[in-house]
Length: 343
Image (cartoon, rainbow, N blue to C red; front, side, top):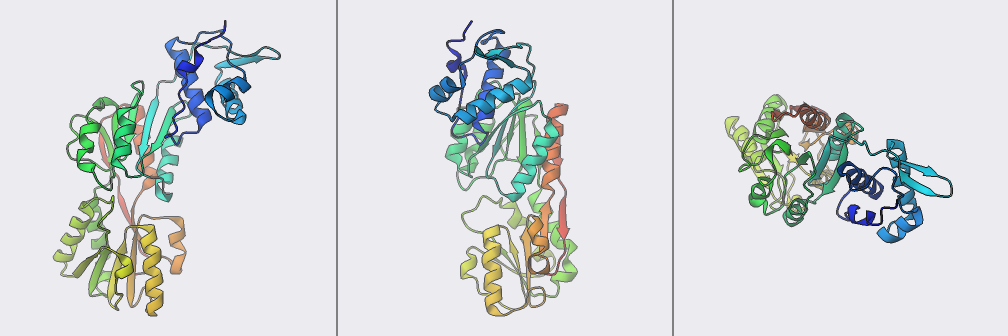
């Protein structure tokens, strides 16, 4: 028997970061699980699948190869592909929503995928800190996911995000990287304690900071970074009697001897280092530099840049563990200081 309406069960989402061959695989497996496609049914040829779904022939072929590897379909030379196994069990289906994909977010993603296990189905989306896209993706989501893993960071409109998130059953929800005020109920979370983390990290380097008279943090007016970072920064500077300043635009900053700069963004770090080099001031002696979020290259640049950073690998790993344990625990991920020559 041929499944003539198979295309009604296949969904290819242009917004998803998940590769199209995986989306195609997931759609067919989901239809088999629900009984919409039966054992023994013939599937469209690779050419027909490519034409009807407007995907490349390579994508269609890759999806069928993946389905064969999963044991869902078989093939007979001259006849084509068919459903060989309707007893398909994939208990974990995850809607994974990141605000952006940076170096450290990729570390988190890789750790999550590795820890959740090969049998899990993951649909991966990125909303680029855009609340309108965030709302659209969650409003139009399918209801058959077992888990929703969400990083809630926005350039604007974030105050309404809790209304959208609260529509998700709490036993299915895991907030990643940040706790969001207004999200209620018993849900899982793996997060950074932003105010506490930056305060304690700066406290650990009081001796090094004491060689400078002013601490400046580069915090753009239009940013997705939580305001709790500034609250922790203010608290530290007042507690230890440092002069301080918030720099909204690094390109307009005037670099002076005796200052320490904390850069949150990678692009700002590059601009900051360029400006310091132009002044002929020596980094680590006359001017200090601290960067948010550890990446491998910061061990090398300028003989090493001091970083304050959460453990992104652990964050991804813990998120996967909570899902597998069906836990609603809240886990604060440790913050680490890496002292290097730039301070």
